[in-house]
Amino acid sequence: MSEISSTSSRTSSSSKAVSTSNVAGSETDRENNEEKLDRRSSSSSSISRVSLKDVDDPEAFCPDTSAAGESLYDANRTVSRILTNAEEIEANTVKCQNEELPFGMGFNKPFPPELPDKKLYSVTFDGPNDPLHPHNWAWSKKITFFFLLVMYTFSLAFSSAAYSPAVDVLAEKYHVNEVVTTLGVSLYVLGFASGPVIYAPLSELYGRKPILIISSFLFTVFQFAVATAENLQTILICRFFGSFTGSSALVVVPAAFADMFPNKYRGNAINCFAMVVFVGPLIAPIVGTFITESYLGWRWTSYITGIMGGFASLCICLFFEETHHPIILVNKARYLRRRTGNWGIYAPQEEATLTFREILENNISRPVKLLFTEPIIFLLSIYNAFIYGILYLFLTAYPLVFYDGYKMKAGVSELPYLGLVIGMLIGGLYCMYVEKSCNEKMKANNNKPVPEARLPPIMVGGIAFPIGLFWFTWSGNYHESVHWMVPTASGLFSGFGLLTIFIPSLNYIVDSYLILAASALAANTLVRSAFATAFPLFAKFMFVGMGTNWAGLLIGLVGVALAPVPFAFYIYGKRIREKSKYAFVL
Image (cartoon, rainbow, N blue to C red; front, top):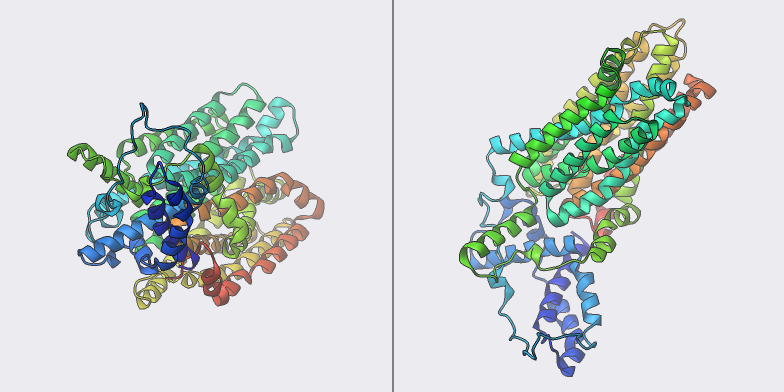
């Protein structure tokens, strides 16, 4: 890692300097405090890149010696201090050293003596085979948790587009333009943009499980609220809050997979997650149309997603366990304090006590900082945002081609989405195949991640995706003379391109930012979902006004313009990470 390594070394020694000054503080202590900080930070270099890597991969832990114990203490402490932004908090504390304390211990009670070295009381993982570490959990346990999280992610993604067949029905029912009822899709995706920015840093502070429980429960509540709503404004508002409260899955789930699976298996786990995120919105219109056209009616599209979300929420609450490594150590320390009665035992994550304002300023703002300060996140987010926007644009484009153009019946006109689904499945399998090459390069790099090894599939997908767009829009424009199977078959290229761009992008971000993966993914999701919010609103006007062929040419050329992005990172990615304040170079 670049600057984080040296920054963490400074903060490790900084906290010690702050803690060793007398709380009551004589004038001399106060005057010398900053000098101590500078002296100790300049001489401290105990936290290396390797120790940070150890936290991510327990297979690289040192043998169980006292030296290794100190290394793990430093590594775990570094991770927690980065996540809690402890350096800035302590810098603010130093500024207050010359100020008189507003109150004392009470009843003129003197301040207690200094505490002993905190390292003696800090818990760590017990070597490479510690059963508490998620990488060492039984595979049956990991697979169970994997399916629980995938189930919840699918219900969230499915709900985004299950509503779309009801757009015309609701427009007729409430006597409004279709653009107004289309807001039910756009506002839902807008929730995807805003929710993860809050959930990601909170999951890094407080763990994955509490965030997932709260999020899945509220998602379920708002799905039933949509299903029982009596007016359009309630439907639209509840659609937004359903995705806003439920969107933790988009960032916390891949972060939990990174917690559970070592580098060798992490890529395939995130492959499956990405396939669910993309396939869900394409299966939903098919199922939703048949439900809407049946005796059940449009309300049952929300009842079904509410039932799915409720079941996932109950399973997460009952069976899922915390996967975030620093919080596992917090739980370990809490258990040992209770059993031994020794209140001094603590986990590194507990060192910093954050106020709501500090959480808001330092942690919740982190995804936005990453987005605008990290070229890797910014450019990949723009690329991902474009293809994700096209995914939701297809919800308008396919009915225009097959329902209005080829005059297919409702329900049948959604079946061509299966071409996209098949293309995505092929793309997902291709990414899993390429994963073997990534593992070989990682093995050659001393079992450390090589992020740029994730990029070749994006290069292939960047070529396939515009081909699919041109194929679909130009063949679909001439429905009088071109068989419907021709634009349907274009989905093989479009779907393949969507997945081979999206999946490696997520893996590249996770491998590059590791312990900050949730915040980095939140930044990506923010831009991605903002694009997907807007695309359905102008899609019909663009395709009708410009014609399907010329609209397709426009968006296809944008795809061509973005295609060089992975090539640039393949050449310059490592140099960019070396200069980054947050990215890792292992």
